[in-house]
Length: 237
Ligand SMILES: [Zn+2]
Image 1 (cartoon, protein in one colour):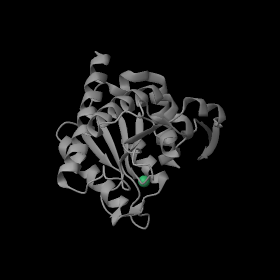
Image 2 (cartoon, rainbow, N blue to C red):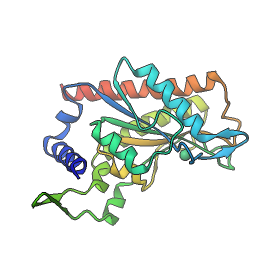
Image 3 (cartoon, rainbow, N blue to C red):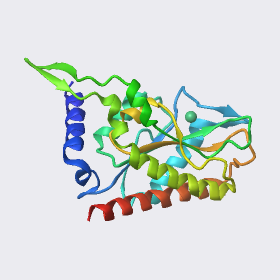
């Protein structure tokens, strides 16, 4: 209950003091979310197990950036982590950017390097009346969690579009210029800009299980993360 109250407070602080608190003083906090884990393998295809690939990329990104930003992981081992716990880790860390790493397995070899963000229109279909909760002998009204992500959608879109461009360049394709807009629960609940990215298609030749591939993909994502934090800092000066 207290944890919920703290998250509630953090969201109120975000909404009240606008971006100066989000990107202002203090360190930048990057939340890295490796998809799946433990009993949830994600996609298994051609001897590849998605949960392992997701974690490997997350660890490379974290290692590359650990001296530049504070890195928070939703999992660092092969363990089950609920969606709720991923959200709580992200929001309790007061993150400034959330990146969830996944892989796809599409029949069409063209489908890879996809990025997902929320669809702003979905907020119309989301219930967001104030929630009430008893804390001690008091009833406190809560801002619900399931809309926080919409507040940060413009920044999520900006980051997602820019990263997609880099991925398209790397893969030498251009079939999608914008992130796919989808009502994803994890993105709705995080109180920071965030994206879900499918770094490769396990069903396609564009995925190669080599150190080179992992390093290149991770570097592309790292460059955009650094750019995102630098631009945000500048906008705040
Ligand atoms: Zn996945």
